[in-house]
Length: 61
Image (cartoon, rainbow, N blue to C red):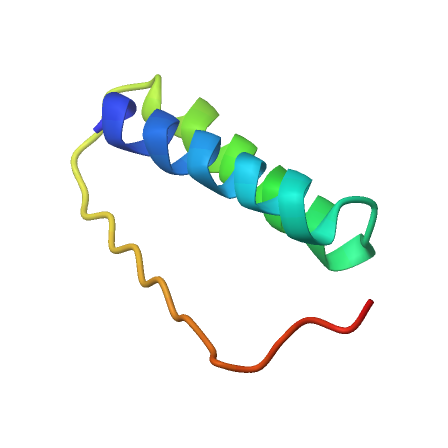
């Protein structure tokens, strides 16, 4: 689980860096994934579901 979250965090961070760097929503998203990654370091029973939605619309510059 920790490895998966770490890889997802890295992918999200790179996506933000290349597409949305500096925007408020990007910073919030990255903070949320940081929190998930930190929580995964403490073993606990549960379920993690990651949904990645991709939109065909382009980002506004």
